[in-house]
Length: 457
Image (tube, rainbow, N blue to C red):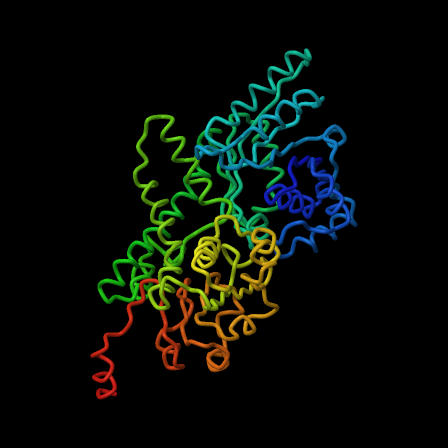
């Protein structure tokens, strides 16, 4: 098929590359000329495992092209995907101005009855608004056909987006048009060969499904973090509780890990947008307010653990950070727990030694002044960050941090303190190497119980 994808951000680029990989001819359009030039030369502007190789393959195969000119990308096109940004507005609502602007431009330029697909995460009713804009333009131009607009939300995890697209759990198509449904079934057929995973529904149903999925996953995380807070007070290890409830097939093990909070470009933004939709329609979304509040509180847990042990004034203290991205597999630092921690450490006067495999350039850009002054020092490898450190904080659970050399770490650090924001380590093992350990909801052993345990052994 001939496909046009408007927007070369995360969703648009993954969508374009994966469709091209299946043999379609895809043109990706973006107003950012620097980004288009880079992509045309096979340089990926974002970090996503496997993306650069896929770009190279499909550029050389002439199945994938990039341009700043929308008109050039619409010749004989069969499907147009709108994948522009919908950032969070000051009032929490999703800003769909870019989506509506693209709709207006399409109405002026589209000369054949292509299916227009809303891929951007947008509030319920957005596809209807896009269709209304296109219909108005078609009537003004006295065209004989009318556009078909459908909703096809994305469900891509950063760091695993290509796998998610190529082997989807489900593909949701919001449409009442049988011809459009048939076209989308044909387009997605290579991705669902082993069993049917395409769900057809109304456009509004599809739009809300995207928000509902992210809100539910965020709720699971905040629920576990709330239980972790109680576990700390009760002398309970939240990891044991996690294993117990995860064994229930109705619950499962996904997204029930206690930690230092969620971040990224999806959960925080989508929760806010859903709360705004509820407010607009007079629906009290009290549970989601609690989810958001718990997550905001959780992001301060790391600093609280540090100041409880080292004091509120951290002048002269060196704090080592392992991980800066909001999750492994990405360089995305949007709404990352690391930002809350870094801001707090800078206010308290600490010097920060930090390492992340891919996200340090983003931190250097955001904190250019503290970096230039040496308040934040970005290191070349993990163990160098530990030199004379008064604490190590694990913020992002990259694989290379999973089995560190604790003996070597202890030699580098001034104080043997590990704050584990992802419950990555076995507290017993860490303490046996001479460290003080703090995990999320992982109660420290009672002082009187240790001698008894030794006598029993």
